[in-house]
Length: 213
Image 1: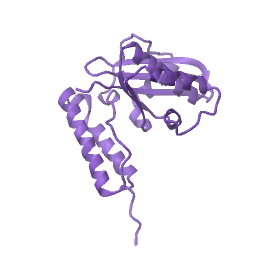
Image 2 (image 1 turned 180 degrees about the horizontal axis):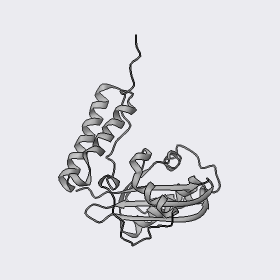
Image 3 (image 1 turned 90 degrees about the vertical axis):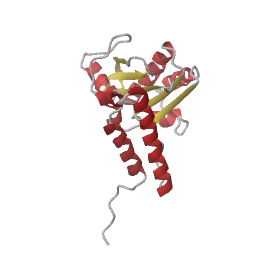
Image 4 (image 1 turned 180 degrees about the vertical axis):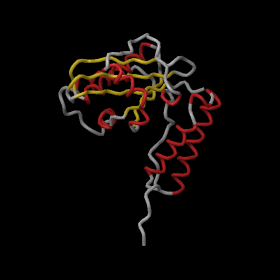
């Protein structure tokens, strides 16, 4: 069984800036899922996304996690943390620096961009917090559907050549097989695997309709 924990994070702002909240869903191998979501006052969506990362990293450190895979649907946050984009807004810089400081306390941290539909549980509990139903640290998570807690498989950016796409697809299926062997099918529904394969084909441009001759 992998010793890498997975964490989905999300930030929400109604008004941008407006009433804002962050959400964290942390899954550790062989341990109960931990959820945390709360309001942060008035803030922009980007501030809320960074607050989710900071709170999530802090939670993971507190629980003794050493290896972590973070999933976020904020492309800005992911690319700034990777050094691709510069942090230009002053309201983000302190949060960015705190996230960098916390990241150093792990053996490894990878931050990956996912689509919004792959981040449904974090999005849901973030909106719950804005609606007056926060998840505070240490509380038991409310019931969720099977696919809510399923972490997405490791899916690198698809290669555009046929051999590369085939290799990525095989890797995706191999990851799924290992996950099913260790945790059972219920923890990673086949629909989630299909979604990852679909993403690979989509990124490779293989789902585009051919132009009529």
